[in-house]
Image 1 (spheres, rainbow, N blue to C red):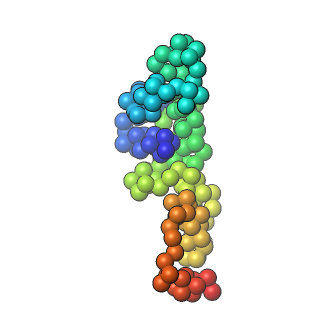
Image 2: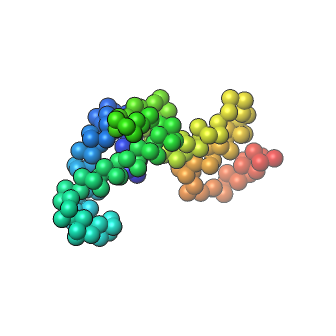
Length: 147
């Protein structure tokens, strides 16, 4: 979820770089939970002594999330400067609550000459549709699509 939430912050314009994102993460419930239950998040007492505000841990989380967004084609992430640039497909993902993994699948597999059935097959690969049950009265109609 952090990856999709970071994308939304970048699209909104409230987060333009890693430093902004690390500050934004300090206001999250995740940050509070990491401070209160560090062992659940793989942190030791020594980690908390060395970095009591978890700045390095937050930076690592943001960097990892930004790399995922960059690989999926939602943002441009300049690792050297730490800056983020929202791309149009990232805006679509944010506005329509499409997970970054699904957008990555679409970017990789969507072709300009695909037919309607192929597009439906591609969209059906999305995790967003994984838990949608098929109703009894829909089975006949779905059978027609398969044929």
